[in-house]
Image (spheres, rainbow, N blue to C red):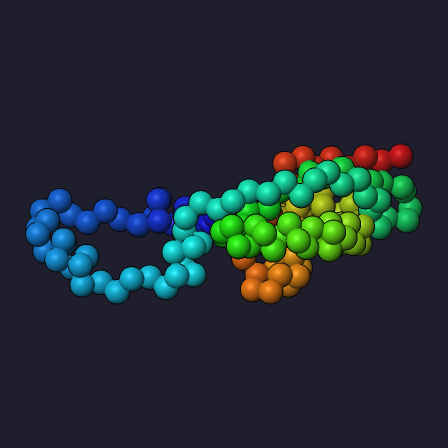
Length: 143
């Protein structure tokens, strides 16, 4: 996710000189909180499935076909997701069907939809734990 990109691309390497001071400083630094550690390591990907959902437009009938994959922090969250899968699929169907074409036609609109889904799906789990929502396919069709 975003935390991993920060660590890989934005964090500066320590200067080559003064290596001993850097090593000593590393030993004395406090460890990052476990939540941050969990966010920075790769998660477990779960395919939620394919959805064909009517959009809320009333002037023209439109539907969207979307394939959803979620990234979770660990196996505990993976098990929670598997137990809650019917509720997760229902939440995805409900949220997408409430959207209009204008809401999802741009990359920015789809990104907002992912963020909304992330919040809604995390609310279904006891302690959250879903790191990201991905659309592996997203097609809008007008009839």
